[in-house]
Length: 348
Image (cartoon, rainbow, N blue to C red; front, side):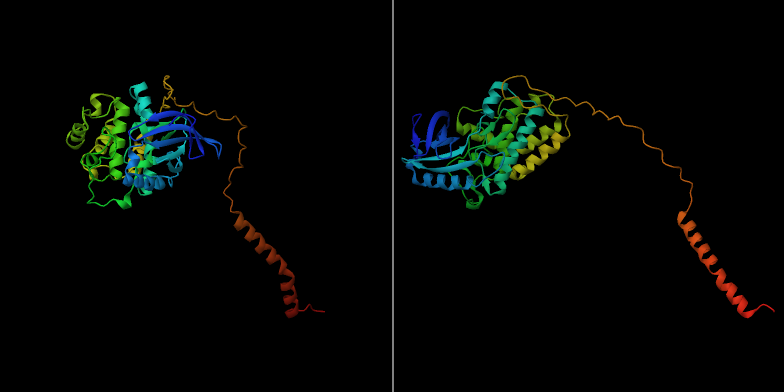
């Protein structure tokens, strides 16, 4: 589609901002609501498959129900001249893959806040019954102020539609980032997304994914059978606790990983809380701005407190009761005098 094309009579395509294996992505303007949006238009050859088109509709509808600060919001979807499209929130920023290429690698202090945000968005989808199926740095958008949003839930699948016996000839996800069970053609699960998050985290810290191969078949074999090199071989100063977390996430068996992205996120938050003050992620190619411990707050100068009167140990309650008793006794004096004179009248 050419720039300026009016999609579905409503969205004016302004420029192409990306392309992938299944779609072209455009920055566009919603003429009805007068706002900028991002639109993913599927390749024409995919739409010739009626089953694929129906699956696209189903998954786009499910993804449109997701509303979370760390997920790119889906505003609309439809078909224009036989080509399905998804209208998404336009997020000004760059994908994590671009940032890794520019930076080579991120420090632990920079990587953990980004991964916690990714886990928050994907964990929310897991609670809603959706698996992303294609978690990779290309689908993680980082804004200039360090906010991360997960995009491309268009291929997510409802967990309710997946049966344990299901097997598919279609391998979901990108070969460098998919899980061993996806590499074997099995159905993805939340633990599959957790594995992919582990691959992303490995790449963030080392600058490269754990496995490299010349063919998708060889890549699938490595995910199924090969153990990744310990991160400490590339980053000697990585905290051992964090390396253990990542190695657990990259376990071949789904049951050996964290079950959901929420679980992984909580573990990373606990780890991050035990570390020094984190650095701000560097997203513009400049030197990272490291936070330093803030100086202690100034104590306001005030006049010295007034001295309290010394406590003499007086039981004022007892004193009060004694006074009342004394007053009562004095008040009875006239009565007793009357009684006395009644029985002892004065002699005349």
